[in-house]
Image (tube, rainbow, N blue to C red; front, side):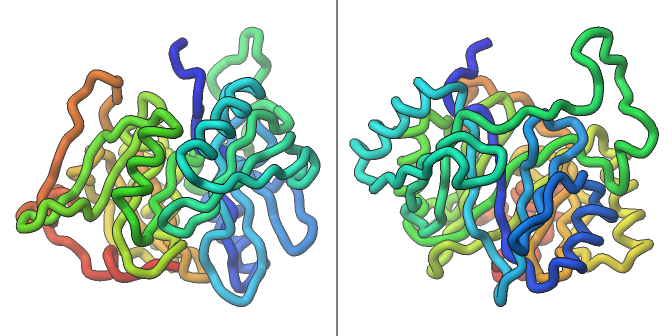
Length: 309
Ligand SMILES: [Fe+2]
C-alpha cells in the first residue's frame, strides 16, 4: 500500500450554538455514534471508522471551525512533516499527548487562509464493532442509524490566499491537485480540490476575503440510494436543505448540502472517481460554474458561495 504520508481527515472540530440541538442533528439524524461528552463538547465517530472519534462539536457563541486534523501514517512521518512545514515557512506548535482526548501528540499550524490545522499519528483505536477475523459485512442492528454515514470524508474551507494554501498542501504535505476552478478572464484560482489518497478530494478550498471560514464537512454514504435515504430523513425532520440530491461536476460525487441547527453546512456524498497520482488534474472555468458545482441542473446557488460559518 503506497499511502504512507497523510492518510485522511481524522477529525473536524466545529462550534455550535446549542449542544442539545446539535446532539439530535449529528447523533440522531445523521446517525453518528456519541463516544464522549465532556467540557461542553461531544465527540462522535461514524460507524465504519476505527479510531475513537472524528467529529467534535463544541458549544460556543458563534458557529464555525475550531480546527481540522489529519492523521499521518506514524510518528516518523509526523516528525518529517513537522520539519517540512517549518521549512516551508509556517510556525508549528507542539501539542503534547493528552492535550486532546484519546489522542497522541499533535502539531498545529495556521494555514495561509487562516484555518488551524493539526497533524497526528495516534488516536485510540476502538474498531468498527466488527471482528477483524471473519468480520462479516454488517454490524449488529442499531449500529447503523440515521443517514448511516460510513466515515467523515472531507472538508471545504473558505479563506484568502487560496493559491498559497494549495501550494502548501502540494509542496509540504504531498497532496495532489485533483481539480481546480479558475476565473475564465483572469485565470485566478477560485477553488482547489486536493487529494492525499485515492479519493477525488481529501480537502478543498474556495477563495474568500474573510479568513478562517468553514464551508462544509462531508459524510460518506455507500450509494446514491443512501443519499436519497438521507434526503428522506432531512424531509421528515425539517432539516434545512440547501441543494440536492444532485451530482457535482467537480469530483462527480452525488450530494446533498444541508445545515446543522447552528448554520454549519453539512454534506452527504457518495461516489466520485478514483484518484491516482498520474491522473491529470482537471480544470473548470467560470463559463461552466453551474455545471462544475451541480451537474444536473447546472445552476450555481448563490448561497453556496456566500454562506460560510
Ligand atoms: Fe464536499
